[in-house]
Image (cartoon, rainbow, N blue to C red; front, side, top):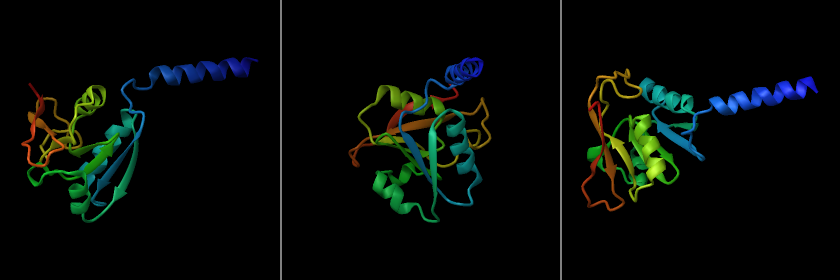
Length: 149
């Protein structure tokens, strides 16, 4: 009986400490096998409670094209989660907002590799934009979130 109570208490403690924002589904991160910042970003998503599966590919161009990532919005890795793409170093807050609000878009993008972004040194004083990319390839991406303001 004491073991059962201890087990239930431990289980409750783990559930209580688990992040409330963790996605129900899993995230797949397509990245170059030698990219350390992509690895760091995926690890940060795991630490936040997301189920993360990584797929190492030397050429991500087909993944990006299939996801609908415009060339001007490309970052160094592409992730998919619950019907959306996450391109580049999208911050955790933006992923949480995306999955909470569920806007009618294809995904989020942080073009390039902004210094200080998640996976790129995480500097709380860094400024960069997170873009919402529409399903319509002809539509211009719009600002979804400004990090650092």
